[in-house]
Amino acid sequence: MSEIENRASTGAAAASGAFDDLVRTYYRAWFRYHPEAAVDTGDYGYAHLLTPFTEEEMGALVCLNDELLVSLDEIDPEALDPDRRIDYALVRGAAAIENQRLLDVDPRRPDPMRLLPVDAIYQLTIRPVPDFEAALFARLEGIPGHLQAARDFLIPRAADVPSPWAASAAIAAREGIGFLRGLSTHSKLAASSDRQRFAAAHAGACQALEAFAGFLEHEIQPLAQGSIACGGPHFEQLLRNRHFLDVDIDRLYEFGSRLVAATRVELRAACEALVGSDDMAKALAVVRREHPTRAALLDVYRDSMRSAKEFLRTHNLVSLPAVDELEVIETPAFLRHQIPFAAYCDPAPNDPTQRGYYYVTPPTDDAELAEHDLVGILHTCAHEAWPGHHLHFVSTNLNPVARTLPRLLNSSSASYEGWALYSEQLMHEQGFLDRPESRFILLRDRLWRGLRVMIDIDLHTRGLSLEDAAERLANHLGFPRSQALADVTWYSRAPTTPLGYATGWAAINALRNRVGAASTGLKIFHDRLLAAGAIALPLAIARGFGEEAWAAVCGELFAPVAA
Image (tube, rainbow, N blue to C red; front, side, top):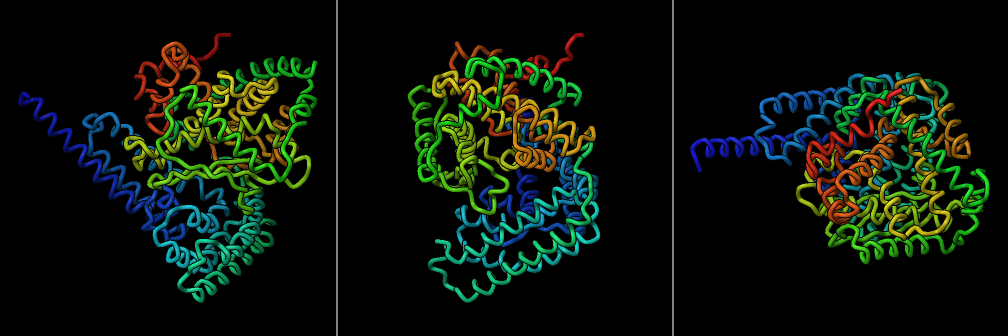
């Protein structure tokens, strides 16, 4: 090795060491402000804490992020290896996003849902926390003081709370009371060494949450009238520093509009093929004729999930994780108002069993049962489990390069939701989703995701109301108004997440076509695509296929269309 090469190697090693030390130090402090995120990433040293929220605490978090950004400026990213350069970009972008949100966005649209401690308790019951009892007792004992501080925080800000957020937070609090009350019979407490301490902490937490639910209903909801829009500057910040989409909002909107127009044409043709007319309601009725009984519902989901996994194994479409478990269970009662049908909860990266949870919300009437139709269940299993979310997140957890903290904590919906939507298409192409109704379901869902691109942008940057957004979904998709309103209320809380489904799906397809994956091997293509984790697709594509590949994909999807 020449002297010049030796100096370069020494400089790279020094930069890598400095960066690694900075990331470790930063997250040790950052987790104090995000203890639930710490537990989800497998760091259980924060499992006894509830998430802080006061002005003073958030001010300290802003300072911490500022210190990180200054320290990152002292490290030359070009001296880092390619994977650390990705982590550098992710942690820098996340700090910039969080500070803008804390300083410019949250003060004008406070969200009571973020103050609820129910998720903090629930996560302890599904994560392999070493000292579960001590962590649970500490969090339960902290709830009365936490909720009193939440009252003090919200009272002067009540008018700034968006009305739909106040309503959904009140529902979540009410549903959470039932969950907390049921803790006394939880299997993890069967051998509790201090039932007396638990009883006192449990009673105090339940009483505090019940009082807080009433506070939200009677003191916050009547006054809540804030705007749900995050605003253009924050929306653009999210696009560039979470999804790394250096695309003008107008170009994104045009992409969504073109996708909606093209999909509507295809969907009408699919309806014609299925029922002899373009009547979507009639086609839906045909799809929903076949569904399980209530008693058999979970077993049908389990069987469908196993069938999807076996199909992947026999067709060799993607590498399967060496270890995993996927437990199909009823959606916890306190989450059912947020999860109308099914959802997925990924395992912690250091969980030795890699156990994920596949939630299925039990129907309350025959109409809801019909929405768990047999063909739709197969699509949902492809999306949520195999080869969708479960495979994606478990593969990430088992890959040392992909499971760094900057990557685990800064996933992009364009990656994980884009992959899940593509997974349904893949399983249709390969013959797993082979019923005549499958093409109709694929296209209706694609139309839904295309509409999300436009509604996401309209809600947060163009003044669209939730009511008008819900009407748009109802008109295009036939959603009941309550379902449509619940869907767009979620959009309002998660700017840029809804648009990730369609943009990610389209980017994966454009990349697949560009690299000729159909001829060179789908398994190789899929493994390369997933190797970087669930991070922003532009970063993952550039790392796996080259910068020029992402530039070509971006140009194909988002370039202005000539008049």
